[in-house]
Amino acid sequence: MVEFATRSAPAGLHARVSRRHLVWGSALSTIGIVVMALTAWSTHEDQHYDDFGSALTVLAAVMGGALFLFGLGPFPSWLLGILGRCAVRLPLPMRLAARDVAGNRARTAPAVAATMVATALAVAVMIIAVAITAQNRAEYQPQARPGTLMVRGFSAEEVAAVRTAVQQELPGVPIAQIDRQRENGHFSLDVGNVELPDLEMVAPAGLIGDQALLRYLTGDPSTPYDENTAVVVTSDDVEADKVTIYYDFDSTRNDESLLTKSVPAIVAKPADPHVKELFLPAKVMRDLGYNLEPEGLIIDPSIHRTTLIEQERLDRRLGDTATTYVERGFQASTGWRLFVVAAVVVALGSALAVTGRVGGSRSGRVLLRVSGGSTAILRLFAACRVGFGAACGTALGAAAGCAIGLLLAWPMTASIEWDAVPRVAFDTPWPLISALVIGLPVLAAAVAGLALPGMTARVASSDGPRGSQ
Image 1 (cartoon, rainbow, N blue to C red):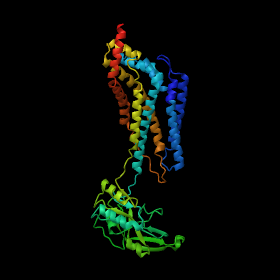
Image 2 (cartoon, one colour):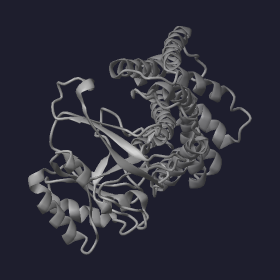
Image 3 (tube, helix red, strand yellow):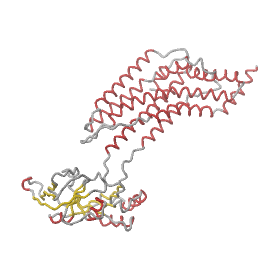
Image 4 (tube, rainbow, N blue to C red):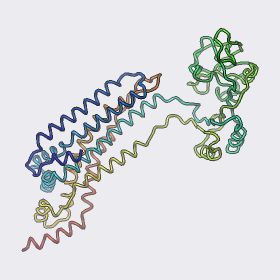
């Protein structure tokens, strides 16, 4: 795209950008915006999109954005030409700076184009990141109560070592244990009209454990516990007096031949209103003939809230034996901020590339003669020249970035889950975009103006004798 900007830049101040370049650029940008619009429209529904199709859609949208940016190549030079022709009413340093930038577009247009691309990428990533964060927050499903420490991923032979490690790092803290049945076969539950979304065939039915696990689920030590009674843990207003268990150790037998057993049940309120679980005492499972083994260890947050430092120490002690997880709620990704910072740095560097030789230019020599070699005037001239170029690049880049970001937000937030969560609204980061559009030219101008004292002094001293001859 920078090469396109170089080729389209005219040689002089009064020359105009070739109409052929503008037509080609407009055509490419139009194609790119149409591609992005079509991909956005194709993914606007709140439904499941398969992985392969979604990847192709995102790829098409990104290619459309790249084509859109490439087509904007001639427009920095075109905008600089307009700026140079409209600067006649500005004060002398500003007028000369604008004309100097516009008069040498073969040098300045590529730098402005690079600023535009970097700004567009930064703005687009900001918008897309905000949209993805909002959607991910809506789709987030906590794995446990807030503050819960869960230790999983260990074998039955390693449970003693894992429990010892947890006890050494968290001495005196009670540990609840989740069990699972070793045997394969069929196992399902029926709790009448009670809806428990966690009881699906794709996942183990119910939570098996002891009294400590029940206390963790309810958060209430006074919850009745009986080794032969199941507990429906839900905040819904339901009634349940029994749980029917369907099981068979032979997975090849049909449903009509399954063994059944009914156990008494009670209803208890959970500590977390989002929790809907069925607690089965370990003795009930053993009475059915199942052999149990530990599946995970839990530290109840109502007893002890595990800190990040404690989790890190426990991770080092466990090594590869087990994995730890602490439920801290939704954690937004911040990696995109590094990309935005890098893009802003590139945009700033490209804007400063407009500077060139201040006193050696014709406009600089004019200012030196008019001002008597004033360093302040040359600083203002350099600041204005860089500021004008940066303003052109950031203005075009911000407009392009908003178009790309708002269109790509649709395919980037398309759901690949079977149970698709409806799209949620997100707040476009207009304050950040405005700060970038205004702040980058101001910062570039300030850096350019403050970086000149030595050079301006040398230019003034070398230009003075020639003027006196």
